[in-house]
Length: 263
Image (tube, rainbow, N blue to C red; front, top):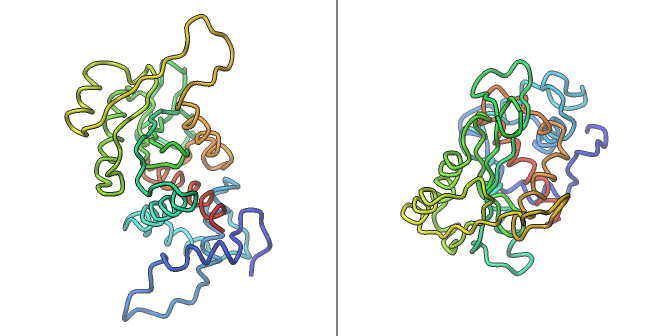
């Protein structure tokens, strides 16, 4: 057993996840590693922002931990766990499993020096790196996320992430309204959402001649979710070679938040 790191799951929290962990493949070698320890190691990387090779020695070997992380990213295990926990979290507070409204926004973050794939420059925010397009429900729980180069325009990235939301099928069967900021405003984008997704776009603009912080209707929810992500050092900057890995770490951050609430 490893030390009691702050990022570790409690035994009760692990029980929420254990039934969704894939079983070993039949005919293969018996699984010897403790999956509780594997999950704790993955969350340690997420929270503390260390390299895989820098995992403390009381965790399983970093090669084993990374292999589970990578395989479950490729076969959709992390996404399945995330979606299940989101539905349980909504039901726990007596909300319908499928949201009726969603909020979309983007966040530009700097990329690490060794990252070269899909990196661009956001002229509006003067940031070289990547952009996270995120859709959340009215509770701030993530529906789908898209990580792209920071140079991708708002409306273009918005279409891509909303396509992913649309592909969720029955999980968003009640969704009717998408709340956005001025960056996604425009008749072409609104018509595309109505024609392709059958949803209505509501734009919330900042009041004119206002200074400082202003609490904007609906939009503050997604901003709070971005704040939750900044509590994970691995997400403060984009260190991942593949955008898909960045997306997985965002889902992992939400998994940790939701499993702590449910437990």
